[in-house]
Length: 397
Image (cartoon, rainbow, N blue to C red; front, side, top):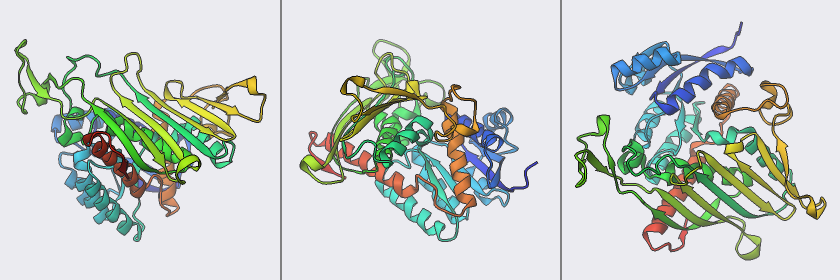
């Protein structure tokens, strides 16, 4: 029986991300020794019936129908934000000012200005021991964490090229229904911010370099989609060939951009290419990263998430890439799970996220990625949009 002091969590939102976060809060203390004991104290959502059903299913002790009530409660220590990006700033800043730790899903928010305000609030709260973190969960995939370790150990030498792709196909059907992710007022951007943000963060985190400039293209392939459920009546109009109401898609369906990383210009610099799309038929969740250096290369694909491909130039030139099955106890996070050879899944990244966050709070140090780290990603997203809007002209970050 644990004697650790409780960390009482209040979560805002209970859909896809809420379910993933709930699983993580429940699971982390059962497989890792934590300095604080997470308790699923309350979950908030606007729909009373829906949030009560979610609480029963996901294991939360109580419910609120207004996130402000969570922040007012004395029995809540941390606010976990799993809502659309247009709500992040208001919730996070209010929570930090009330002395609550904050975990906020990515992207941090929908604009650089809001991200700057959130970062300032986080830095002010940190002086009082109140911590905050942005939820870029792919950092916690063991194979990707091993990739970062290899870079830090110098096994790739100087980094020359970065190639990052995030490929999905769930919107490839032009008659798939409208969702909040396709409404710029709620999501901020489309594939760029939803999945491209993960690639930006992973590339910068693994290499240790930040993106300093971009040249970009954005494209929307399907400009209207059928409205369904609560979206009906929110600005939709009838399609000429159908009686079904339709709504305007106001975000990008695909984003591509070239990038330069810090470290100088010309031959001494690091360059990268990025692609994010939800129209790549046959690709379900292909979050890919390849890094080429002067001594070696590495490649990762989340659709084979327990494998890291590594090429060591010091080996025989015809050896090619070798596959490392990242299930050994010395690999990041893996020692707390199953015997060698038994792979992990998508949900484990969220569990590891909770582990790192709770450990940092217990040790009274800043968890990573900080809001400042997430602000850098937001600045890259803004630069990509600015470049695309200006005929792909080079845009400094």
